[in-house]
Amino acid sequence: MDLKIYDTSRRQKMTFEPRVVGKVGLYVCGPTVYDRIHIGNARPIVVFDVFARLLRTLYGDVTYVRNITDIDDKINARAKERGIDIRDLTETTVARFREDCAELKCAPPDVEPRATETIPEMIAHIEKLIDNGHAYALDDGHVLFHVPSWRDYGKFANKDRDEQISGARVDVASYKRDPADFVLWKPSDAETPGWPSPWCEKGRPGWHIECSAMSEKYLGPDFDIHGGGIDLVFPHHQNEIAQSCCAHAEGARDDRFARYWMHNGYLMSEGEKMSKSLGNFYTVAELLEEFPGEALRLVILQAHYRQPLDFSKDKCREAKAALDRLYRLKQAALATGAQAVQDDAVHAALMDDMNTPLALAKLHELNDGVTSGEGAARFLGALDLLGIAVDDPEIWFKGGSDGPSAEEVESLIEARKAAKASKNFAEADRIRDDLKDRGVVLEDKPGGITEWRRA
Ligand SMILES: [Zn+2]
Image (cartoon, rainbow, N blue to C red):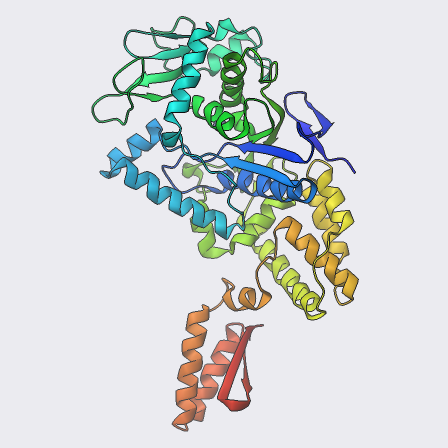
């Protein structure tokens, strides 16, 4: 069976053919690390995690690269606002980003390059663009990509000349030869981080150049799949394409650089565009206080990745209940002793442009068969492929976010044991009944051991 993906550059569903048999390179734009990620940022992370899992079932050699943007004016501004060192801000944010990804059950990418560690490659890339007549350096240290120098500019994003200019950043500076030209390198002042370059003593890259440099460093000038959120199509991805195609007379694909482009759709929140003023802006961290990460993951996968997703807390609550059911089924499946095998129907749904809603429907059809060996094996395989209900069911039921924490339950069990030891049976019963009301059932076993589970 062929893998079909919708390619943004050709605007149609295509049969995917790797550049080299058995080998796939995937590059996805990662976070700018100045703040905790919000649920909209989580969408591409979850979507491309499932996609990478799918690719690994098909090809022996998959390289998934997701960058970290750790040099950016938003980072500089935030560090200044908080009165902290830029490096402290980026390091802390990277650590928290990784925690969020782990809670969302997303495996780390194979390579996670940072912009600040790819500066020499960016400088070399910009030099090639200048040599090829596609970029120009100014006396003040700016280097700009000259948009009219490339006839195919705008083709990928389907933007005509007027839209290219209105889409350009507001600061249409006087130093630009053309209003659509964009920054490749800019001078840094004393307070701003910078590196030496041929154009100024201290300067820093524009945003777009890092992805051209990093994708080439790890995947080569011509690679298989580039992904990201739909909001990145213009100008970011259009500019990456311009930079990469124009730096190479040969080697990069004619007008699109990566062979296939995949974009996930927008995320709405509680029926509206997510914004802090509407009170529907949720960071992953604050949602994790209310819901397990797998519930957020499941809500994201319930929508097809290219469709808009309307996120809501109600959907998280429903997803939590659905996961409780899946974990109960997993418990039954594991009890048969079965080993996970691939389920063809779930796999086929993902092969058709990552149809996760259909894959989840096919998973549901497996629910009745989990007590038979074969049904159990296929059910477990489907969970692995989707990356849902991946924990040990025991841990899920003990560590659920509803009701008392596992630590609290354990300490109440100790208190009950002490009450019993001092023959205060009324107190022991009160603790047991109280926990029962809060959804925790205690079972006394021989040898004075008390086991517990969530009802
Ligand atoms: Zn990028």
